[in-house]
Length: 366
Image: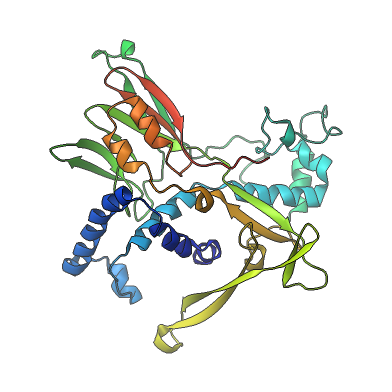
């Protein structure tokens, strides 16, 4: 995780964003930041045991720290790039025809650009031996707890749904939202919380590291969400300049990689200060960082870069305070449109309105 965050330059993104957020967003974040730092300054006797065991000192938080934590959570919803790596490996190992028989999930039935080659259309459904062939080609092994790769198995999921007022005794819509996150995860992802002021009464669940409620009800609306799994990450196969491997090709033009250094501290009892230092050299193109330099690729002999759409398109307002203050479904949907996390929201209000709205910023790939 440390290496991946440094390849993505999460801290650099947070530093840039701290200078770009709106005054309203800054005013929303600052009281939370002040509260965290007041706790750090006055409640050291309550710190978790692990800090002492690992020899960590707790520094005051900065706005950049808070933004990095929030956008790390956004990144954790950006999972499709691993599927794209697997798809590319399948194509290399089996060829496009056999790989397309497996019908990867990133095919959009209403977008002809994502359809398989004409030669593949009309083939019968994938047969079990194709799956075994693919697994063997990738150097993997099937889980021997199951008789077949087609055996049904349970997986984590989420749900959010609403019923109309016609189905409730009070005549108002009823909202249900269950994120299905593992309650055994420590530290916990959700914390039950109430925010009650003269202007606002909100009850729900919050994430540590930032203000606002992820799922909640107020005196006028209620909202819940599930992961949207939107395609916000693209991988690119770069062409290296054959005359100079420190450069890559853009069309016929040779362009130098941008290079930055990241420094890892790795716990080592024999090193001075208990840590040894490792330098990571990260190459970047205009599309993003090279991930294949750091063991993050299933595809040998290819230089792969990763482009995450969020840093390119993030807005100066997060939409979180606007959602808390929303008095209607329409106002809530307007706030959700500003959010960068790819989620599926369901919202109801006391007027009986129900809406489903997707958040997140997805590139228009033309």
